[in-house]
Length: 144
Image 1: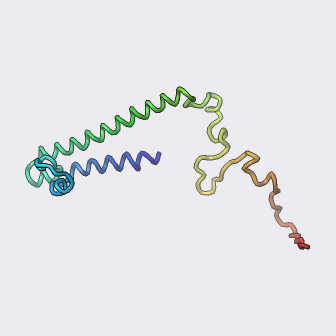
Image 2: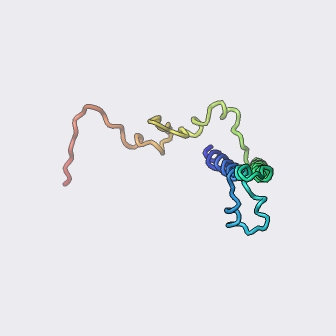
Image 3: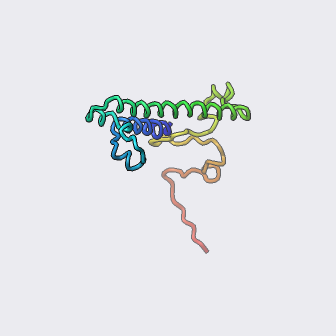
């Protein structure tokens, strides 16, 4: 799904890069704390000789990523369980054998001229108007 790489991968990358590159000067701009030396990135810690503090901030960022992933798994599972009490989340076996495209009467992602396979009379223009014939004469009607 698009949601995964847009939100999960980008946010995880942001968290990891924050743990690597955070500079104490920026932390002091946004957070008024006395012990700013404990909030430095890994590369800043390597540069200044405080590698354990840099690892600590990277660990905090990774722990935050794991927490958000676990929270999303738990919340999604609870929501799916609640929905399954009202309606089934899975198609019936005969509908699974037939396939989604046939059940819905269309393709989900029609790309590069694949077209949509509508079999409904409501979605077809050819029920009301016949398709144009090829190679015939054009007849013009005058309005009176």
